[in-house]
Length: 455
Ligand code: PMP
Image (cartoon, rainbow, N blue to C red; front, side, top):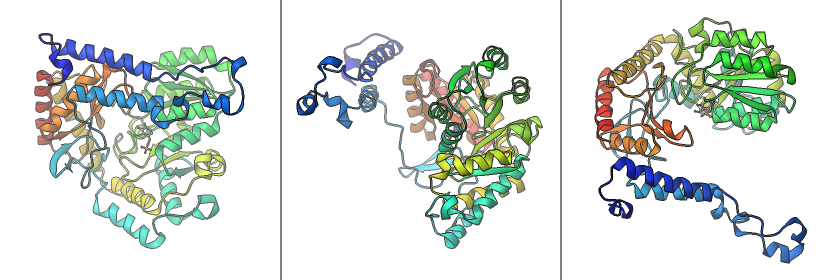
């Protein structure tokens, strides 16, 4: 038992957690502040003498505020008896099951939605690409990094989106940063759903555009905001996700298409968690709603989830893709995608199209998980059951404890803690896969309900 637990006998564990959290939050706030400058502007001085007065925190990496906060969080977790759930090495393909430290787990912490990472055909395509092209293209695409497999992937993606063209980047995160960062500037406005992914936020910051968020999935609030704000800006971009990565719900996309037309704005949809997941053939939120490719200006997706690779893409009109290929820094000044990754994503896409039962199974398993969880009165928030189902615990400490209890019982699921989500909506996030069996889902929800009760 820790020191803190000994000095707080007889109070409920919830109250103890609350007190520990308060202390931690105070320490974290303090650690996040940089020290004051030890001089006023007038006293700043010059040369060696001025340098000797520079606070250590400004030139020692070990005193970086972020690192200080990390240290405090680790100490806090240790004092609560929590193991570190991060960076655990998985010893094989992570699908509906995975092996960690020699032990087999039912796995809900990987977005291998269609079970195509580890599929023999996908691996064979990657190996074949290595045999032809090696492991790196050794240059940026415009210079001498272009390989046929890049265009084959992009052309196929453009085709399934029903748009003119597509460009693939080496990272999904970098796709958003570079695309938004390049296309928009200080006279523009980017409005985004309140729960939008970090990569979008980083892109907006880089662009220098003004930024506003509207409440989650609230089209009426966006409409009002645009009625007020639209005329003060040149270009306006609205950004949504297909399936939201922490909550597993999605927007009424046709309504947002109407709004972007009404207000003469551009619309971007990040399909990281909806491509391969929604629609009868896995073609995403567009297929789900029966929209045309041209209804959305910028389709963005990642290759790292349903498509079993690594990288991101933007699909849309030829002018958009051409522009990005010749000017977006994350494309122009970065190496081309590694050939085995492009080949793996293309092979996974073909498997998905040839085997729509994978998509159907993923959707069934998600619905089944959600139904059982709701029956067990687990707080699943607004999840629609498409691939992501949260179990909201209400505090980071409870989420971490619950994840640890499940891990001990052979279930691997990641806790999502503050600041990734609001502290009061900390959660476990269950990623479903087409490979999960009904039995795995049944037993998982039963264990989850038991451990929640015991918390
Ligand atoms: N967008 C969303 C919505 C995401 O959830 C993620 C990461 N999971 C990304 C973009 C970044 O994609 P990647 O991990 O492939 O870089």
